[in-house]
Amino acid sequence: MNQQLTTVTEEIEELKSRKEQLIFQAECSTDKDMTNLSKKYDQMNNNLDILDSQDISLKKQLEKDAAAFREEKFRPEPEQYTELLDTRIQIRPDFRDKLIEQLKGTFGKYYDYHRRDIAANEVDYLNAEDPDVFSHRAWELEYQRKQEMRRNQPARTKKKSYDMEL
Image (cartoon, rainbow, N blue to C red; front, top):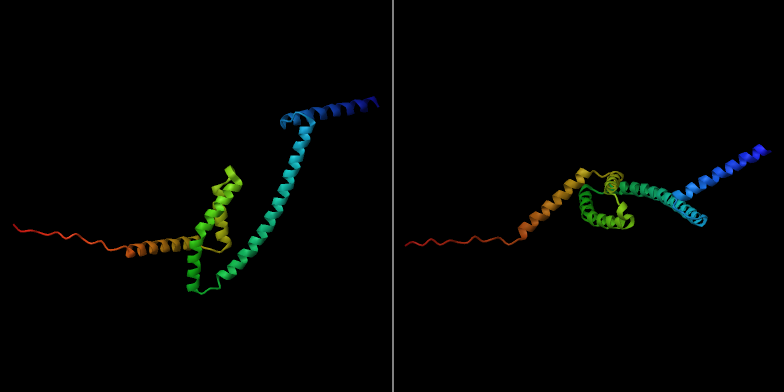
């Protein structure tokens, strides 16, 4: 019985020592601080669970939307496809800028441009969109816009020089 009591006492002392180490590592001065910290961790874990469930449901929705988009994408006639592509080229920069600002506001200093680019490539893949075709068409539209601006500018008149004979 004495030996068991000694063993249990040693285990209690080890647990007290470990508790003191944990309190020191967590920068808590009392048990109350430790309890508050534990509540914060529990809340964070709950938030992570909520975010995980939202992530799963949003991924499912993204897959459904991507499949629906692919079906719609291949329905138009070739002329309509070009018009659709042109419209998407016009809309995308504004939408992307708004989304980036929203993400920067949400994540602050943790916003990662690299992950944004990976996500953009994944969206292109899910939309079965060829980035080369998209960028080439965007270049063509920009070139046409510049050409149109040049045509609409008034023609410059050359100054006439008058040669005078003496």
